[in-house]
Length: 544
Image 1 (cartoon, rainbow, N blue to C red):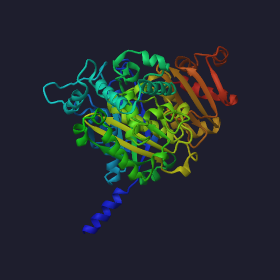
Image 2: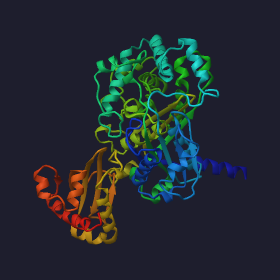
Image 3: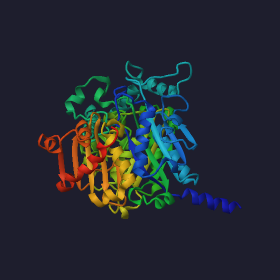
Image 4: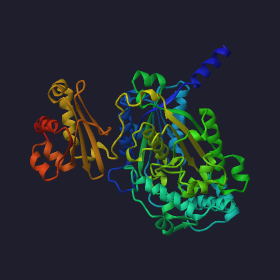
């Protein structure tokens, strides 16, 4: 009996785990976007992840939901937007490592044989300004961390987190001769990377001088070297190998080769080091374990998403992860080995500094970015030849999660359609969404007729107030389909703004006039575009 139990345990622990769908909202300045409470943002991210995986919510067996600021069962309230099937919902809070902690839980459920399909969801609705304590009538969980810092550098004015990480940067400067310019160069890189990320809260490039001269927060950190508070959500669908094969998801299945979490060690408090106080040793511990688990070396890694809450922490983390030798992070920055053309591309998304940092969503946004990179679907951010991806998510108090990803079935890449969110907007943001809903209903009723008459795939790129939305109407294969937020590929591409698209499809805007006025742009098969009236006439008969 004992031998059988051991064999069963070993078998379950060897189960492979894959990310088969990801999705996220655009990260926003708190309060900027209307009607963007956590149920709405969670619905948007969760729906995108489910659609990316091509599955329904009914196939999800358990949900792990992460958030830091909120009441005790916000996870259930968020998941109920996607469906109510009575599944277990676990609420997770692990400070800034919350999203990746939920990922760890989901992975363990599948790896342990407890489920075949897990939804991992993270969100945060935050207040503006620097983070502060919510509960003042009890012990702060970071009190010992702050005491370490005070013993070394004292306490100054300014946000506590900026002091803690800024002082870790000072320690690195004192120990290894790193300069403030090294930290500024990291912020310069991340802001530059974010210009190609439609999900990023900030998408503006700054000069190195502008970063160095922005408002001083806590020496050596300036404002443009600190992550902002953010509203936003991200989600991932985890699945077992059996689930992947059953649903024919091999072409988009990204394997979690290893994922490890570590918490504070005695050295955090005993070694009188601000670098260790903010997580150096627990990051190193988790990293060493995950590379051993995956059987890979640091040289195998191509692309990295790491926890750059402050530029100082990104530099320190290079060394903690083993991407360079201790004391060599400044040289790594100067050599450009942290960006395109260098040894690694680190934070192609723009990182927390520019993409934003809604605490519960950050770890899942990192996962989403790395999955897009490994699927070759990161558009302008794409890292050439990305095969192995490394993730690092950190929470003071403390927790560090490190993970390695690789495509689970590389022989299938490019052999079937991969569905991935191509828009940072949600379908409900567009007035013309009702038109495409009507087209879908008609397609569901009489798809074969549409396919027979149209014989083409139409890609609609609609420009709205919050970004671009993509609908693909497939009137060429099977019984046809209408999908939002998928890869923008078609035989013909129609580009219009939201209002004009709405009026065109209702017959209120003449297509020839719209074309010559520049309101309607067509790319690809012009003859096929002329058949668009079939959609228009049916939409026009609706009750809109």
